[in-house]
Length: 359
Image (cartoon, rainbow, N blue to C red; front, side, top):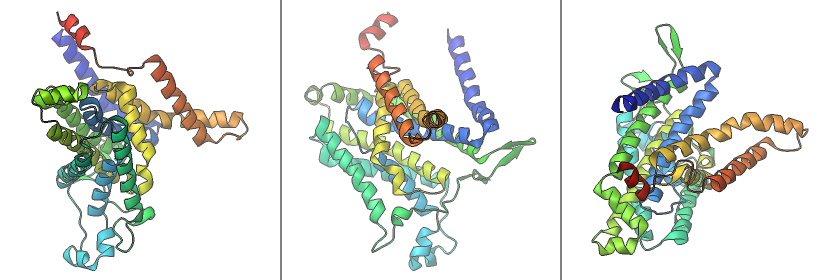
């Protein structure tokens, strides 16, 4: 039995490693879809800590994604040097931040923002908590959109460009690499970086799930009053859930900024938050494999449906806009999934059933 499981893991690992090499033969667009899917997996895993483990409905999660993206954009673009003379005097060659500093810094700052969001919402539950977090996400987006006056910090709606690509051990992921006569494109190199970060995220999530902290979160999710009566410090654990979940969003946002080379407030709309919540719920709330499945499907589905919406638009002589048609098809797919699988595509096994299987 152990050998079979090991063989499955080995085959799965090899498949993930060769996937971008196969996809790049069909064009870089398909590898980009895989790259963005991995970023959404990281986001969904982070939100699963807040929603799935602790049971705190967060509709402003995209704010932490934005914090990480803008942090990297400011630290790896010429914007600060071009805008502030004092900064240019201190760093005449610009601030080209190392990946090893960006990742922990993005996680830390996003975690602090998560704790700041969680502090005033400790006594809120359900719909009220959702409304407050939704407002927080919109406030961050509006700030990013308007912080170009009187001090130009974010460049407002024009966004920040000329962001450095990631460099690891002298390897520039923004440039293609030739290995034994075989070209590996930039998007493929980013795929392997994102895959490594996703694997680390999955390990962290599994460790948290089986830890005392994870079990305390689940106790709060099931019955907060009972958890408090059992001596669980619900206040600190809620703040920790917000902070831990936000840190995943910060790292994912920083990688998004490096990958795109440009960030603007338009990338962090309310719809993004809704889609990340949908990934967790449709995949299987609180179940890590289900969350990963939901993130991959919902992030790749809009891009794949581009190839379906085009012919359908042609069939109607262009009367239907392809973007609207694509959103309609996504909505129909989500409704069908919820009707057919109300607990998600891959829900967590119920306690009774899992115990019966073990016995």
